[in-house]
Image (cartoon, rainbow, N blue to C red; front, side):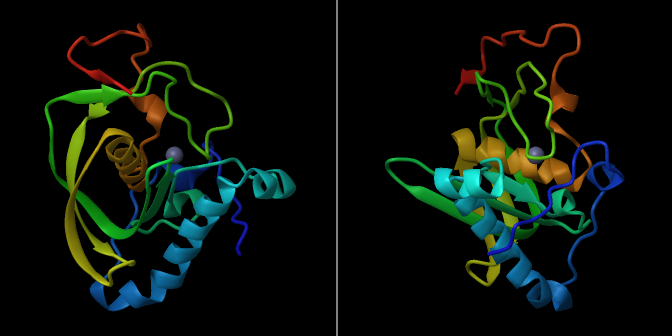
Length: 181
Ligand SMILES: [Zn+2]
């Protein structure tokens, strides 16, 4: 089990556009991707998180561990189900006009200071990526929190942080058409 050192938001690697992983290099990053997923899983275990001083997270992007490659992991678990993704070169191929936001705002392992305000994102997205859990290209639809987490992580690959999306003048502006999650 690898305890990653998470890069914080003042560091350059979080503001850079990350490089796609070439087809011939895909295999070489599989182990890292799986370790990122494992890290997320363990971070949601209270005992582990406390022992190793890690913040619980549902998503992690390679730039957050100081590697500017297009690789992300997402792990979301609730009473009903758990979903895991380890994706190389994820692309949002379509997104809904309908938006959603988290009423508690977003958080990020790389952002120690909480930035208050709503982040509006597409409620549904369709993603195309190379999946390390399937060892092939996949296309899938996501909605709700999963869609938000994927958009947040893909933003990291382009050097974008969640608070870039918060309205500076009216951080808690309500968009009536958006779904509150
Ligand atoms: Zn983040």
